[in-house]
Image 1 (tube, one colour):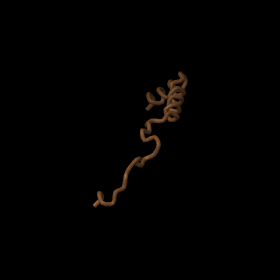
Image 2 (cartoon, helix red, strand yellow):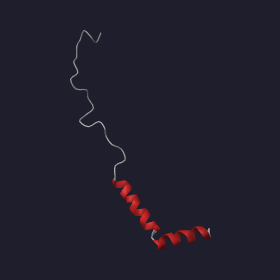
Image 3 (tube, helix red, strand yellow):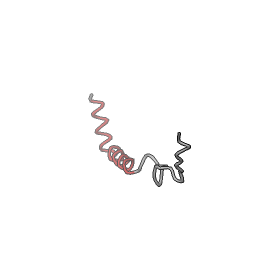
Image 4 (cartoon, one colour):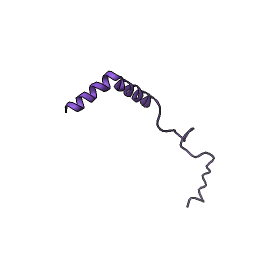
Length: 54
């Protein structure tokens, strides 16, 4: 347990924790997924023929 606390303190004073926080903030600000469905989700130029649907 003392080793873990020593590691936390050394990370804190060396600036590792600050760097990890900054990197995490940057990760949260950048979007992960790219929406490929730009412009809507319905089909365009779709013809509706009553006789073809039966």
